Amino acid sequence: MDLTSHFTAHPQSVGETYTEHLGTATAFGLRMMFAGFACLVHGLLPFLFVRTGSRAISELNDRMVTNRRRCPPQPLVSDARLPH
Image 1 (tube, one colour):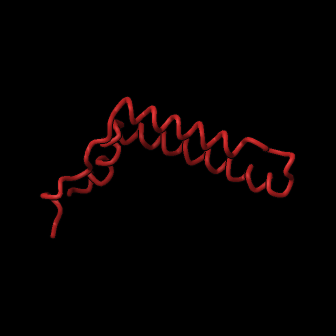
Image 2 (image 1 turned 90 degrees about the vertical axis):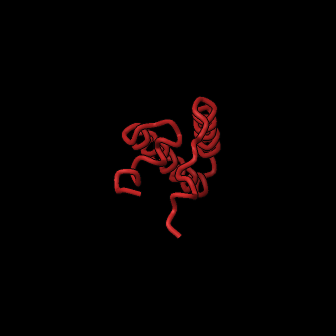
């Protein structure tokens, strides 16, 4: 496997370019970080961010499942090409 394929194999398997995947993963990560912070605050102050964590999880799951239906995942690498 050449160096470029390390950066492109997974994005291609989900129907994205490297740049598209970078943007999507970054958006997901930032959303999860915010939701995680909101959950920590909610633990201390239960009247704040009552639905923030569960809503973020639900919305991110919906986005990921919708994306999978639009472009079914492709195999990353054939076993025959893996070094033994």
